[in-house]
Image (tube, rainbow, N blue to C red; front, side, top):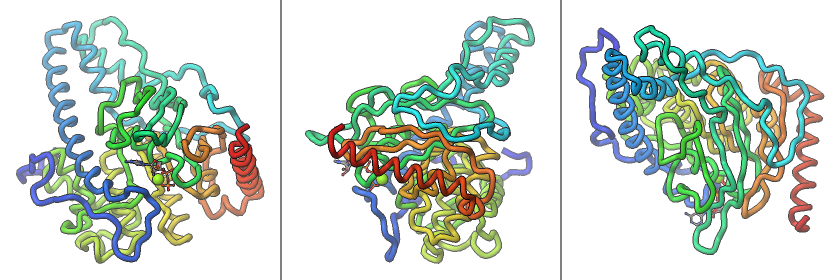
Length: 403
Ligand SMILES: Nc1ncnc2c1ncn2[C@@H]1O[C@H](COP(=O)(O)OP(=O)(O)OP(=O)(O)O)[C@@H](O)[C@H]1O
Ligand SMILES: [Mg+2]
């Protein structure tokens, strides 16, 4: 908290009177099955996030105390704290032409160097500057699914979903997920978010940075398919909500919220004090995105975030997302029904089969090098979109034929 922040922090895990954020408003459409669960999920996720934040902060204090004693136990605790740090700026990607790989394709490199500087700093702190036993190498994958199946009674939503997303230092992966309605796309990202009833999986393992997922956590932020807002809170307080859950004081959280309101293309002057019902669908979506990004999670899970936007707003939001992704370098999972959007945003595209969903193909695509509109005019980009459309049709017809 800043030195000038004299206001008392609201320490409640979920701020009093916050209630649950509301779902879509009249006139909005959503294709999400069982959509009524999402608003409560967000409140629950944020409450769990606050609890975890407190746990991490307690660990941090313990690590600092132990560092003074220069004990061996310090290294592990300090490293765990350092692992929550957000990576620095990304570099331009070297990927040239797309490669098409099989479902269980190997990652681009066998071993990533990981976040060595953070580990080294923690090690140095723990040893009081003296040489210490090197910390174990960071886990090379940020998210791993191994033969993950989710069933509800006799119905299987996803079957044997297997993939690994490399934890690229200073540059997160952008993973687009394409697939027919009901194939389990939301199930996959809600399993990563740790949100019931999709979480836990019926079979298989889901790991984040090598650790089994136990529920929602501050390292993973979700933008829901039916973007949600707290009706009784202003835009400013909606964006600041997660910081409030973390006990950040009013002045600091409002300053940071104003910064994010601007970043997602809303006006601090004219929009910050509005209530959600005074906003358009696109504006509410930006509020939902700002509320997630303000917390700088390591993994961002976006469930058709731009589905309800008009085309110009959608391309602007795609550009915004690319800019924010370059700044924060999180790993992003992005569900969409638009092949253009998947090709533009994704480093990797997972093409899912119809229900029960499984990954039919993993396709590598070049990173966005130009604004979305310009990219869409590019002949190479159009060829790529065409290729992927043809591939989806081929995969769908062969999976219907049982090949
Ligand atoms: N709680 C639940 N109980 C039973 N079935 C469920 C539940 N939640 C989801 N399903 C089913 O699991 C399947 C996958 O759902 P999911 O929401 O993941 O699909 P999706 O690919 O995201 O679809 P869409 O593109 O329409 O959003 C669907 O058939 C859905 O009806
Ligand atoms: Mg869905």
